Length: 277
Image (tube, rainbow, N blue to C red; front, top):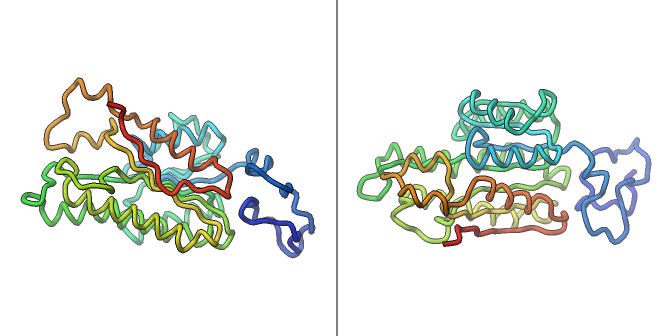
């Protein structure tokens, strides 16, 4: 039986079944942080868009804290490079090439992750794209569909694939890398990108509204301009002198770690971070 003092909000363990000891070894009265035993155990996370940019930086940051990670992205080569950069051993990571815009591929990927690691503790949605011809008068239907399918539908697909086991355990964190374009539309972002980011922000709010009671917390990180490969899709390259003042991927990764490492009772629902200029 589960110990009467067992609190699933602060105890993520799945070991408390009918044939286990009645004592909840992780419980501490007046707990102020995650249990020390949880901080020492191998935690399991999934990162989409993990091959470059923010996704890679998040992988590096999590690996430093001992996480086992499933890295998802479009190409196996860049995912392997991220695993190497993060110093992940073969036992501590899984690289899976898949497009988050493909519902079937996402669910197959989730199946492989769960078979390898079991239920996960963290999902970071970092996959995203844009197009050079991005304003309303020029964006093609093909490009519009691609942007919305990757940025918004892909986030929804991965959440639907990984959230149910979190909900069952009553523990889990979801971090969506959104954009400050989710607050206001500007020509630089483009119409399709802006639509997708408003949707991601709303999806994050829906998770907290519906599943907060189930031990789930979701955070939308809204970065301003970041120096990532996505800049290559700009209609024109930014001025060379502007790169020095842009956010770096590791800055956004630090925001992810804040959302992840807060006590389970606390949720950063949104975090706006912009270059100081």
